[in-house]
Image 1: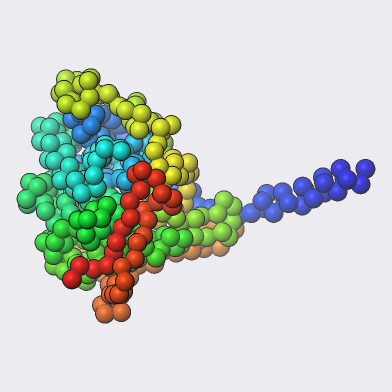
Image 2: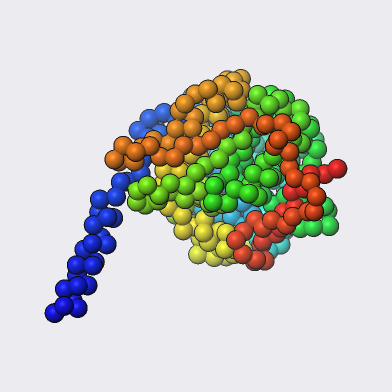
Amino acid sequence: MRGPLFALCLGSCLAAPLAQAASPPKQPESGPGGSDYKVSDLTKRGIGTASAGTFVFHQAAVADAPRPVVVFLHSWGAVNPALYGGWIEHLARKGNLVLYPRFQDVNRSRPADASAQAAALIKATLAALANDPNAKPDLTRVAYIGHLAGVPIALNLAAGAATYEIPAPKLIFGLMPGGITTSEKERGILLQDLATIAPDTLLITMSGDRDHLPGDKAARMIMKEASAVPASRKIFMRAGSDDHGYPALTATLTAPGSPKPDFDALAIKMPPDPPRDPKQRNTWRWSADMALSGQQTVLTQQLGTNGIDTLDFLAFWKTFDMAADAAFSGKDGAFLRRDPKFIDMGSWSDGWPVRRLTAQAPQGEDDKPERGPRRRLNIAPTDTKETFSQNVTPRS
């Protein structure tokens, strides 16, 4: 009897700490990042074609006033909006018009073409929505969210907004910047001249502490090259992991993922009169890579298995909400850094504070990217067909 009894006691002892562990903060009931949504019903639809389309999300009700536009630029391979469904839902229910351009045809598109493709999709989508009373885009209040490879694409769109004939963003919110190359001979996204980004842009980058080295290095280069944007409008941020309670909070490359099946591409309404897609036999047909069950990369698989947690509510959703409010009202980064709520992450259920975010202005010479031999950095944890390296040595 000693064996079973010992095992029972051991199991009880191991279970006890988990039962007593502090729980992390839940979504705030109101305010930035909060659940005080005025409208629950959302419109979800596709505009364009299956190989070159944009997913559109907004409140189902007729817009009383023009809606701020949030362009969500996904990581490489994450063409299914369900991978970020929780965040998209939050943005749309808060009153934003959310555009999710599918700038990539998985296993076919080249990273070098992604920025121009995204720009064409945004231009066409805004034109299609111009007279839609439910969408009602406000082209004076535009923000770009980029994740990993979506960050350099967001920067290129902002730098070339006049050429692409799309609205320039008031805010660029770049999470875990990656997928950057400095040579046309290498696979990756080549940055345009970031010095053409408008000076009134609020530029924020954020890395997670578990994978911060490549993100930090890319962020410093981005901050330096966006030279027309003053330091007062730039914020270099870091999200921290915290294992004080259970479940632990882990700030990795894929932490911004907030999967929600309700936003799966296969369930989104097709256009009422879809144009013929030259790359597809049918007018509007999602390929296998669009379904959550058919994701192609280790990165997108990890995005699809993430849970929605405190990092989503308070590190990403709340931070963006506050930054957008500041950017649209003409306030700068210094204003946000002075607000203690901007970096606050709440408290565990036992009252212990969750590790706060860090938010700093660029530090000048001390924050220059390293010079010397070029270093290869991977966008995804392992090598796959849809993985490409990023070289973040600054251009001479």
